[in-house]
Image 1 (tube, rainbow, N blue to C red):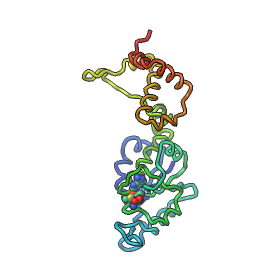
Image 2 (spheres, rainbow, N blue to C red):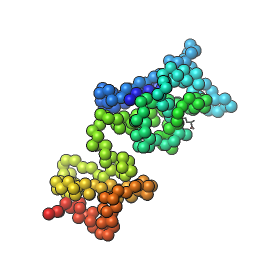
Image 3 (spheres, rainbow, N blue to C red):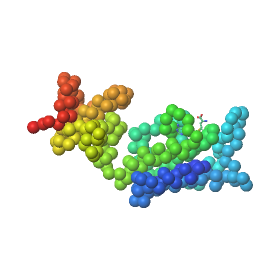
Image 4 (tube, rainbow, N blue to C red):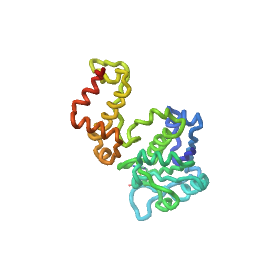
Amino acid sequence: MKIKVLTLFKEMYEGFLSTSIIHRAIENDVVDIEVLDIREYALDKFKHVDDKPFGGGAGMVLKCQPVLDCLNANRNENSHVILTSPRGKQFTQEKAHALSKLDEIIILCGHYEGMDERINNYVDEEISIGDYVLTGGELPSMVMIDAIVRLLDGAINEASREDESYEQGLLEYPQYTQPANYEGMIVPPILVSGNHAKIKEWRMLKSLLLTKEKRPDLYESHVFSEEELKLLKKYEEDPSYLEYLEKGEFK
Ligand SMILES: C[S@@+](CC[C@H](N)C(=O)[O-])C[C@H]1O[C@@H](n2cnc3c(N)ncnc32)[C@H](O)[C@@H]1O
């Protein structure tokens, strides 16, 4: 997959692209990420990329010319062009999956007051990462790239993704590591029981109950599997079933 980012602040990507999973994915040719400087496409001597808004008001607006010249010089018929914008549709795990299947995406990063509205005629979609206003589209582009790249084949171990929050429409169950007893706080005994079927059951029940408690909206819209419905019925008939599972005292 190819990802191109159009920005005025290339230096913001240095740490992001040279660290951890994203770095490894680039090294292993899982993804090719190119960060392009919009300013290089400005035509005047002082490389102006912005100007005052028509009609008055505070701040500066990114001009059509440098942004669109940069975009047109770097797009092809396969490019899917995304404009980062607080007005866009909210980015989700589902969206990350959809974008991860494309050959090439181009992400436009606004800054200052944003982009000249006419630039919208050249983009496929506007995406927001949440209901708040950031200084620029650089962090939103990194958020999207991070979420997309970890879904690409070869970026991370497939198995570590399966039960992750949002993958099955639920939040993930609690995770623990060594030591089993940390200052008197012990891990649920089921996890050291070696009974993998019961561990799976406990994780499934915890995942369901945590989602119900923390994200009732997700829980409401979840499509329950037969296994989940059976387990919930067992729990609803006798809530101490969770405690029984957690103790891991099976024969
Ligand atoms: C300061 S913001 C402009 C805000 C704009 N004047 C408004 O009120 O909607 C500058 C740029 O940051 C990016 N940006 C800010 N918040 C964002 C968000 N929640 N999601 C995606 N991009 C965002 C966009 O690229 C935007 O053009």
